[in-house]
Length: 148
Image (cartoon, rainbow, N blue to C red):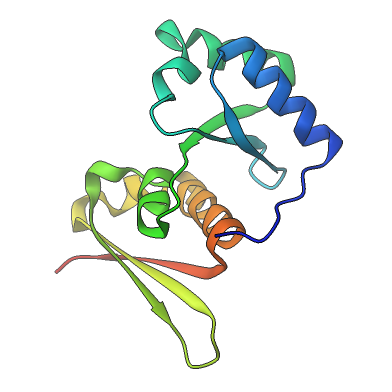
């Protein structure tokens, strides 16, 4: 479980906007300036509500903030949260290991032909999973490997 996640006033404002527009509950907001996006972590089971009919809620929020909005369904199980942050249908396994120095890493095993879809353009999906795994579970790195 994460220690205490501190939200800035900007992040709190974005969460408020998100909840008012979508009606879904956002647990967290990560402003990723490197990838020009805002990632909302939402409660389990609220993905449909958060997206809105034909993506209306997401489009509305993106227009208001001027950045891409991405959603990840929350889980207090590290493996599930990593799978939720990546393209889950192409993942065959997630292994968590702790190194001798105490740092934690996750190894995500994916279908060889679908590795690019899981990693995302310019590694954006992998970076999203890494950001959230570090923020919630102190997992320092995620390795995405193709199954043989």
